[in-house]
Image (cartoon, helix red, strand yellow):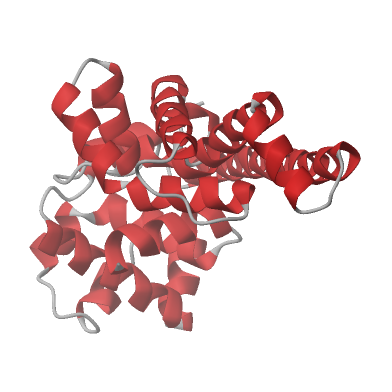
Length: 249
């Protein structure tokens, strides 16, 4: 099952996940740009495990950087989880492995007056938290899949499919924004929404009077407008978050 990221829009600007796909196909320049861009994220993640500030020169940062690279290469966007959520788990696990095997941390524990049991207890707590994160990621994956399946069934009632959305999605940003605004107008107007839900088609005449968009534009983007309106009006939290982030953000 493809995720909504690939199923809704084919946009001009690459998303993070689309960039990762390019990297996995051998785009070395994109890899270097992504590693540079997400250095603060890597440092923050590593620091949360080590409980201290981590600099570029620290071995722990190198471990985190390698782990982030590994996460990029292993990431599968079709599974539903975001790259950063997946990468965070990988980085923390790699850093924990490093802590367990590095004598430096044992020396620090001795200087602080703690013993191996204290250190192991802290590491175990971190591992427990990571297990919770993994559970949450998997739970979110299942919820996204369930949403997509429900939305797919709803589209059938309007004689639409995901392939229709890909084929008929607006190619230009301004057209996409105008179509999105039209969909919001439908959702926020009880009469428009009722006509859409009852007739299973765009209430063109009434909608024309309430948006500053030509009928020709509405007709051209009809399928996209219907799909967005259904998402906004329905119980589709993940798809709504995706749409608002891509169009309103």
